[in-house]
Image 1 (cartoon, one colour):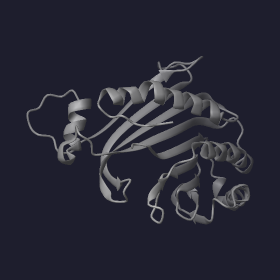
Image 2: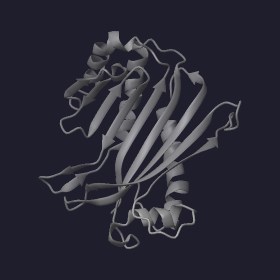
Image 3: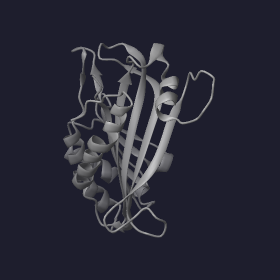
Length: 247
């Protein structure tokens, strides 16, 4: 069964160097909201970033001078011998409740310019992939480029824009959405607990705001991204022979 293996929400705000002075308050405020979820704190010199994680890093919250990110991964329970599925609604709720914390401590006003949601799926070997030749599968199904040699490895990234009410993707106009699709060959833990070759499919659906906003409606973007994934993206993969189970 192919299920969601990662769900990430990223919020972009105006760059602020106040982060270095208020990182402690941000940590305290987020931990107060989720004392059972965030047990570890890891500061970084990169962009003055702080990272809060749970005991197994299945959920990580990151805040830096540019972004706030809530990242969740599907984890394998070695004792119970099965995967623990991602709770998307919990990640959405966390993001909604952390935005006021960032707004208050970084003194943000109309400074939110982007929200992105990444849906990642781990696809194990299946009938159309012969002996793990993911490169040939990507080439045959997604690339229109004539060559006579056997392809053994491949990765693919493509980006396109969507208009939103009141804005278009054309240069000089306002709001738009980005859709970024990536296919890469990798390895992952299978349902039986064994590491195997697989194909990672990542779909990043973004909303860019121009002008920047005072806050961001996380649920509204999720509703659009979720519907677009189900009605547009996943049917395209199904046409290529990849059936992804997603609720």
